[in-house]
Amino acid sequence: MEKDTEKELSNMEEPKEAFPYKPPTDEIKQNYKELFELFKKKQRIDIPLPKLIFDKLFASLILLPSLPILSLLFIANWIEGLLIPENRGPLFFYYYGMSHGRKFKKWKIRIIKEKYIDKELQAKGDWHAYKNEWMPEARTNVGKFVKKFYLDEIPQFFSILIGDMSFVGPRPLAVHHYERDLAQGNVVRFLLRGGLLGYGHIRKGTPEFGDPVYEYEYAYRYLHDPPFKLLLLDLYIIYKGAIVVLKGGGF
Image (cartoon, rainbow, N blue to C red; front, side, top):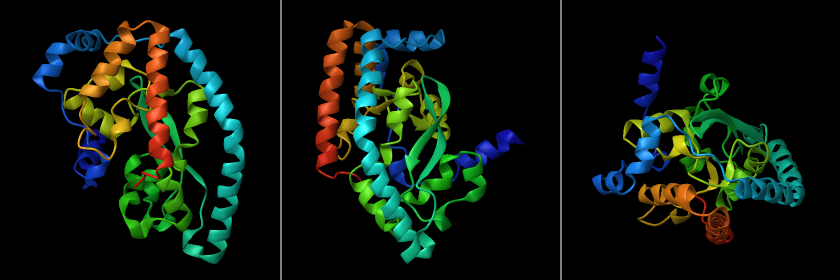
């Protein structure tokens, strides 16, 4: 019965933006053979200590100035709910995502109206409950602003602080999409802790977005670069991600 449900979910119609990730090419399999061997052994790659310390400190520093932003969003969400009853609802929600091959609650800020959320799937923490977020008419007014500047990701700073995520790593996928990614041969999201920003994710909006080679390149460097050299790469990725956010590139 459970397998039938999973099969039914896997066949649900989804917006193409939900899963742009391509399978690994033969060239990727050859060039990063070591990573595929680690996956066969079910051996995850440990997070380097300098990266771990950076995650904790940077998440703490960003959470503090984020509190006034969250307070303003809470007030704006409350006011919008008063003026437009169909737009009212909680500011936060979660669905189950995958990081380092493990399931965790991925918290975000709600950007769509409650009537577009499947309550049965929401109760299960299933991403499909929120798959209507790409429909312009489904979004609240606050949600449109939040999505444009990626503010819906703010709660994930807490996920970084408690160790479910990292600042940089392959973007955590919903359980369904993670299983699909594994089925098509990609292994990086099992090997590494998921990140708020990814080496491939900073290419969002370009033809390169969804090309898995960047995630494999990052995983290879994660495994072989000295910890402080990896930290410099992380800072570069954070810088590139900040530019995307400031340009209001969310959709």
